[in-house]
Picture 1: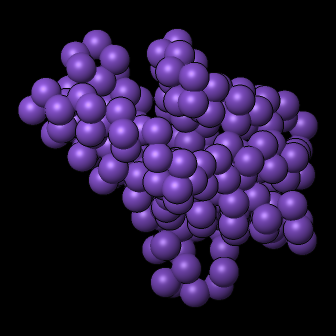
Picture 2: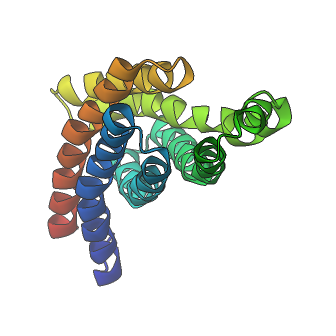
Length: 195
């Protein structure tokens, strides 16, 4: 990436890599401890959206060594984040219906397979991408087991927390993102200076 625009993109990706995970974790804490589901879905939308440029930047870093796994990881993670951001509209509908006391409609939506399959299930590509990044990051961070280990913990805890409604796993994945993505952001800033 030898051009000014590319360096700017890496810098933007780095900044959003700092902010996005904090929004995700903060939104989850607001929901878990405050029950503010509508606000939670807005925060998650923006958090996931901000992670997209960070994942694009990360994909660039891990594919510099001709890593096909890194490219596949980036595609899965990108698609999963887009799905995650998109499904927040459904969760806002759930929140409004719950506020109005219309739990029958909420339960009907939660039990409609085609709705779940077309919104929530496709979000599983995000943890798959994270697991693949765990493999690809070994070459990008040589000698470091921390970055790949964090990817593995995030890849497991994220779906466990959200699919099985385990708050501790949700918080764990958020904390891991808050640790992991700033490390990635620092690397993106280094790449922006050297490329």
